[in-house]
Length: 122
Image (cartoon, rainbow, N blue to C red; front, side, top):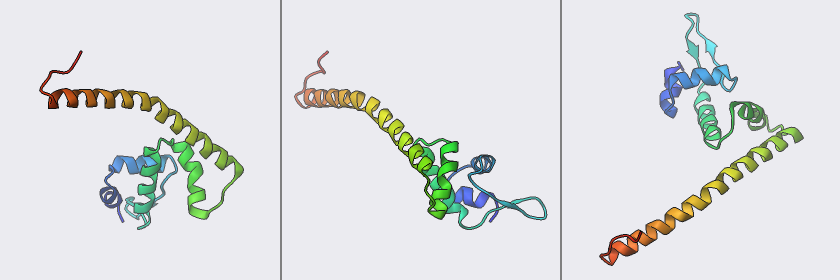
C-alpha cells in the first residue's frame, strides 16, 4: 500500500510515517517510480509505535523494543531499559497525583456549594 493508506487507517500524518522510517521504526520499499510501498502489516506496526510513543517511550527505546515484539528475543539489557522507562513513567504519574487530588477537593467543594445555593468559599 502507498504512503497515505497506512497513515489514514491509523490516523497519523504522512510526515509521521516518514519520521518513523528515518528513525528505523518502519520500513518501506520503493516502487519503480520512487513511491513508498508498505506491507499490510505496517498498519499494526504504526499502531504499536503510536501506543509506545503515547506511553512516553522515545524513538530510541522503541527501536530497541521492536525486535522483542517481532521475534520474542529478550535480552537482559532490554529488560533493564524497559524497567527504567517504567520507573520514569511512575515518577511522572506520582507528580500528577497531588495536583489531581487537589483538583478533586476543589471540585467537591464547588459542587457542594453550588447544590446548597452558596458561592464557592475563598
